[in-house]
Length: 87
Picture 1 (tube, rainbow, N blue to C red):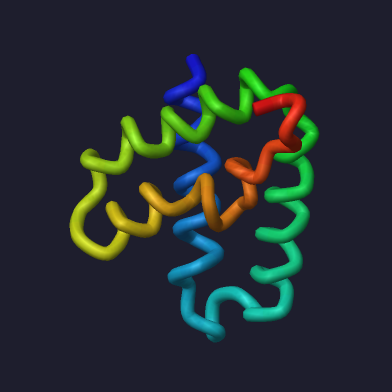
Picture 2: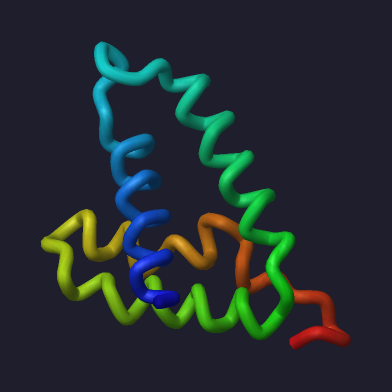
């Protein structure tokens, strides 16, 4: 189930990152991505690690630049910045 959640989050992030300004206002996209990242950071440490691993697991199903984008989502969302006592 976590891979399905990761795929849903990745697809929303791809849409926000790669939509033209004619489709999606850039400021609104940035604000939505920041909100999404903040919401994901409320997960417990084990869930954050699982979600990060799932992004990397599903990344090969995307091509080229999008694959790299999905692989880097854990870092972009700040999911790997766990406090010392939770790592």
